[in-house]
Length: 223
Image (cartoon, rainbow, N blue to C red):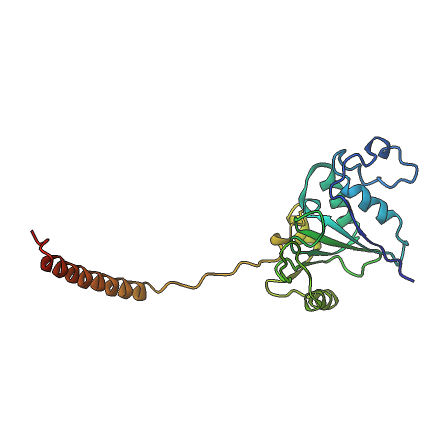
């Protein structure tokens, strides 16, 4: 039977999380490394990883984006989690979803005994119902994330299934834009059309100048 955990680190990047006792933790939760004193994100992640069932454990955790790319001790922990093939999916969320913070967050899904070494990246940051003080994920937004997760395939400008080697080439950086390209190309500019419009505007301006000169002449300002 699967063991599911869904947790939100609150507040994000908590300091004073117990760093002074982590190196001698009696439960061995920090064998991949001790997170920095002022950012406890990976302390919570490490704790939850160690509580998973060895064969069927599943876990989801909401994190700030810094968890995806910060270096030093956090980078080493992140690298080892990936090398152990525990990370399954990274989901980018819209900004202003949570009370108390406007920053965008991400969901990390971890899974024991994966059947392959891929990681699915989903960029759901641009699909939401806008609110004055807080944004919301609609049922359709959530359904799209779930369907994409189940299909586990790349989707243009929305999801990308990355191999272990690709992530390794990126120095185990999980920043979503490195994998999901959401760039929209601008429409090509037809310079001939622009030139024609410019000439038309120039002709209109000349006509207006001539008309204005006539008015001034009638009013006796021609001198």
